[in-house]
Image (cartoon, rainbow, N blue to C red; front, side, top):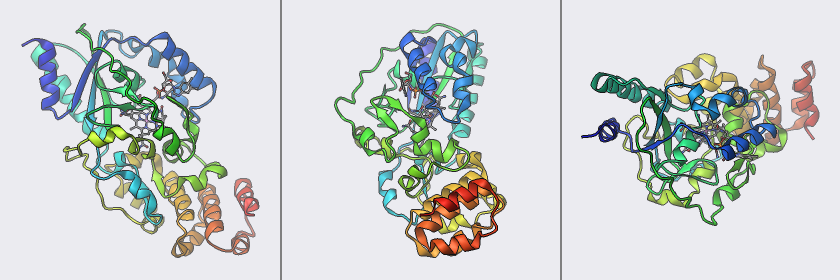
Amino acid sequence: MNLKKRINNKISELGFDVIGYTQPIVDTKTKMEYREFLKKKFHGQMGWLENQYEKKINPKKVWSEVKTIVVIGLNYAPRFNPLLKNDFKEKANISVYAHQRDYHDVIGKQLKEFKNWLYTEHKLDSKYFVDSSPVMEKYFAKKTKVGWLGKHTNIVSKEYGSWLFLSEIFLPISLTVDKTKNDNCGTCRSCIDICPTNAIISDYKIDARKCISYLTIEHKGPFPISIRDKIGNKIYGCDDCLSICPWNKFAKPTKNKDLIPNEEYKNLNFFLDFDKEKFEKYFCNSPVKRIGWISFLRNVIIASGNSNSKILEIKLEKLLNHDNPIIRGASIWSLGKLSSKNKIKKKLKNEKNKYVLFELNSLS
Ligand code: B12
């Protein structure tokens, strides 16, 4: 059996669903598009997308020995369409990918095993990456048979729809590479039309600053006022553009027990009580932990404001006294939607923080 076949077998034995091969070269068009994305400041506070530009466009700067990139896809398709969750305004809506164990840990463990196997069996060194490294994962995936780049700017596949996690193995040897998959989006623009904040500005182009996933996960500080009511009940990430994709009808729910989404949806009320300790304990194995307690609470408060649920008023009023101005500010906005504005102003009559005063003055 040749080496490629052995690698394919090992990857599938480890539970991955799809594998592709490509060269470690980024084309000029992609480099220019990436530069334009940065020039327009579409990356918002994600400074690393800019700082790591040179590495992102040149995999040899990540590992000088790389000759082939192996792209791996892992199916994480849910059993139900996540769009259904948007209607339950009192429920805390957490994106599918964060409903179970952190995929960085799940995939990282499997790829470590692969690396050890490759070294023991074939005396070959390798590097592996999943998400948080300066590797253009979608670009390399779209050069292989893993899938094509959808208009929502994520990889889509006929077999797995929009529900593939990506990871890569860098190899120091040249192997035959795949042919690029055809783009099968056609004239469909469902993902563009459904985005609540119009973050997908045109086909294959995203202004990440407007994306609910960016706002609830990456963005620190208050959300722009104009976007708050569009966030709805989402408290971590957003799946709308993925969920609407017609190719999902061919996706089969994931069988990976570490990734099958936990379908117990908590009420916003449950999370409004969380202090730092409770937050860290509850989310210790979940990707949610990385945003930290303050950003999490901010998200829950904004979603509470969108809930129309008067029973949340008492807890939000308590949060007007929180030490952190971000939390006081978010609570003002949310209470403004649920209760009397004069009552809020009265409760904060001694407020000194400039930002919180801005939120108070924005109450119409
Ligand atoms: C930064 C990042 C984000 C940012 C920015 C999103 C984005 N589309 O880039 C935010 C926080 C918004 C985000 C959200 C999500 N993410 Co994310 N994210 C990443 C990360 C770390 C880097 C991506 C990147 O380099 N973006 C920069 C842009 C410029 O590059 P690009 O998207 O490849 O865009 C190309 C073109 O589309 C075009 N382009 C795009 N926008 C624009 C704008 C202009 C003006 C121009 C000219 C060109 C242009 O130019 C680029 C080069 O050709 C990758 C992991 C990795 N290391 O690659 C995961 C990754 C892309 N994310 C992933 C996931 C799952 C998500 C979410 C679904 C999570 C969620 N449920 O909330 C959402 C989906 C939102 C969406 N529609 O993209 C998966 C996608 C898997 C897949 N099947 O493709 C990845 C690959 C992680 C992984 N290992 O699985 N993410």
